[in-house]
Image 1 (tube, rainbow, N blue to C red):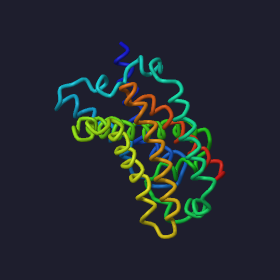
Image 2 (image 1 turned 90 degrees about the vertical axis):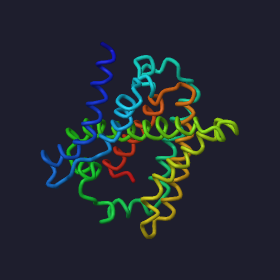
Image 3 (image 1 turned 135 degrees about the vertical axis):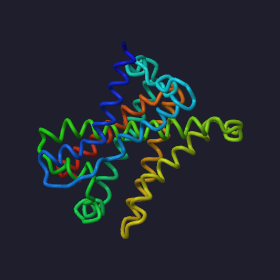
Image 4 (image 1 turned 90 degrees about the horizontal axis):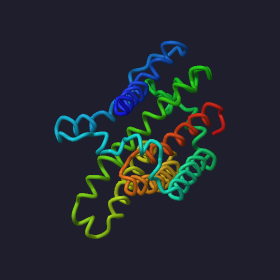
Length: 240
């Protein structure tokens, strides 16, 4: 019975993340938005494990009731990861003057973005749908980076023979680049790209260590989700 609840939760988070911005647009915001793929991409590795590898994807990625309760998580590591990610997120928003101008520029106003719709919606819709959308984005990234990428890197013999932590560092660098490259291509945002790379890379190291120690993507997802939602609330309140 517990496994059915977990599967239902994954489906709700995935579909909520995919259709959250569209729901807001249809109900309250005068915008035409396409369905976001961030919530649906998480199902690709899940389906791959199930149909191609013939393995239980929930067990493979450590998505279990025991891991949901954080029973086996090193508390000190989780605390460090929480402080690190929240501090890095606040640093990006508060210490970079260019971010405010970027947030209000045409470059940031991209049709189809969940953040754009949610920050213009009322709190009645913004809070619950913001929770779902940020949860979907965070879980998607944890499954891909700490699940698929980190697990594959830990199977590369040269990396493992050198030091298992090298796989954690490699996935963290890729995670940082994934968050920095969108800014790097925009003029005048070099400092934001650099801060985005360093902060998200350090956070990914903490998340990777959590996944490595617990064999689960869930502990990192909790912190990642919280940081995403904090960032959303900060923009919603206009505190950037």
